[in-house]
Length: 400
Image 1: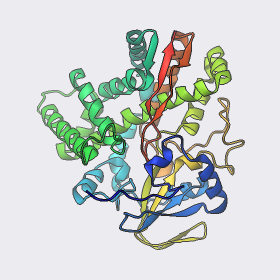
Image 2: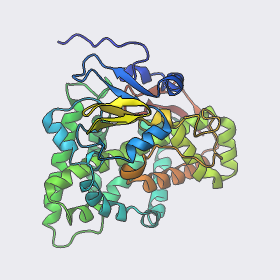
Image 3: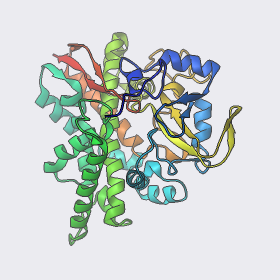
Image 4: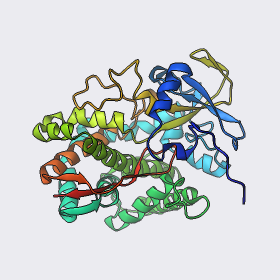
C-alpha cells in the first residue's frame, strides 16, 4: 500500500481542508496577496496547479476556452487514466468549441426558461409528495428530503423508468463522492460507478431507439443527434450533475437559512424574495468549489506566466466572495442585487441546467416554508470530504 500523501496546512488540493468549512479566510488572503496561486501537489506528475481565485481572472479563463481547455485534461484536478479521460471528453463539461457548441445547442433549446417553466406544476407536486412522506419529526435533510427532488425531476425530464430512479441516484452519489470514505469503500469507486451508469445509459438508448415512437423528452432529443455511445457519455453528466448539484444547493441553502434565522423569518413573511434568496444561496453555498482547465499555449494571467500544459483550477468558492465584486461579501443577504456569482459558471460553459435548478429551488423552498412552521437543527451537520463538491453528507433537522 502506498504511503499516505503528506499535506501542508492551507493545501487547497487536500479534501481535508474543506471538512469543517471552506477555507474562506485563506481564499481572502490569497486573493489579496497571490490571486493566481501556485499550489504544490506532492503526488502530481506536474508538481501542482494554478489556483485562480479572483472573479475577474476566472471570467477571463472562462471566456477563452481554446486557450484554457476543458478537454485537454478534463475538469478535475486529478489526472485521469486514459479511458476515464476519454469518457469524460464525451461529456459537455469537458468539450471544447466548436464541438461543445454543436452538442450543447439542442440541450439548451430543451431547457430554456420558457420550456422549464412548464415543469413547475410537476415539480410542485413532487415537492408536496416528498414533504408529505417525510411528515414531522427528526430527519436527515440531505438523504430523506433534498436528494429526493432532483432524482425524480431529472428522471422525469430524461424519461427514465421510475423503477430505475433509485439505482441512478445511488450511482450518481458514488460518482461525485469518491473522496469520502463513506462512499469510497473500494478503489476507484467513482470510476466504476460512472462506467456502470454509462452501461445503463447505453442499454436504455438502444431500447429507446427500437421503439416505434419515442416519448417527447430530453433523451429523445439527444438520441435524434447522437448514437448510443455518445448518448451514454452525455447521460452520465446530465443526470449526475442534475441530481447532485441541485441536492447540494437545497441542503446548503437550508443550512444557510438556519444559520440566519432573521433571513428565514423575512423569507417566510415574503415569498416574493425567493428568486433573490436562491441566488444568494448559490453564492454563499455554491455546490462546486472549482473546475479545472489546461493551458494549450504559453500565456499570462494577472502578471503570472502560465505555460502550455499547466493546470488551472477556477475556484468559484473564492470568486463568489471577491471583495472587488461583492459589497460585504461574507454577509448573507437575501435581497442582494446585483448578484454576479459564478456558481453556474460563465460564458462557454454556463450550466445548461441553471434554469431548471433555479426553478426547483424556488418551488422547493416555497413548499418547505409553507409546510412547516418549525425547522430547527437537530444535530451537527456533517460535511462531505471533497476538494470538489461543496456538499453536506448529513443535515439532521427537526420539522414541526
